[in-house]
Image (cartoon, rainbow, N blue to C red; front, side, top):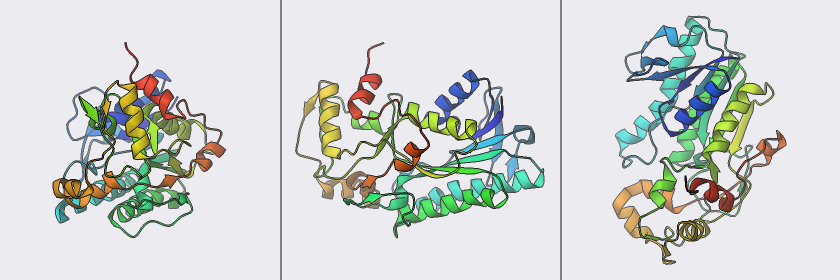
Length: 297
């Protein structure tokens, strides 16, 4: 049994992760701006405030906090908020751990496949590739650099570059699953690397339970699927009309500005490294994932 601190623990992934860790007998502390439950503790990075009861006896940190990439248009201020919510929170955690001499057994952090950039390419990107020279690549590069400061303090560190997380409780899938008809985005030829939320949370848990599970890993399934194929399967599984003509790229750019690139681009991402750790995906293909996500209660 371990005591684990989670940032971002009240979000979609964090809530399921909490539940699973507690079921396994672990103690879970959650940092939040608005604590409401017994295991939730206050922090405010801007004011450098934290309830020390959350951190003094912990064994691991799972750091998944960060402002939503697709929540608002990318103004200059919003871009800085996206970066700061990742890098400054990480730096504050490390400074607090060092100041109070907390002996961490491991630090597990989120990153994103945006590391490889907002492009569509037939290249299969792996963990050894360089960060892209665009906003998403820069965000992830800075994000990971801040997390790797824990490694420099001899704390075992794991980083997951996460693809699109599929859940029936929120996130991207609920936005794609429109009420009447489903269409691809733009021409639909861009790839959509994904992972089921069950598999993602299991990866975080594996990084705690397997002491060799350190380093940087792409958190995506082996299946390579385009946005067009994804949309068509989603329409079939939910018994909705599939309209093969996609939403025009120019319209998305008009609606979302620069942020539209996260909707209209996507490349192939390798999962070989995570598979080499003998991680067993519960949902390796989209059909099986959809069966689980849309099964009737």
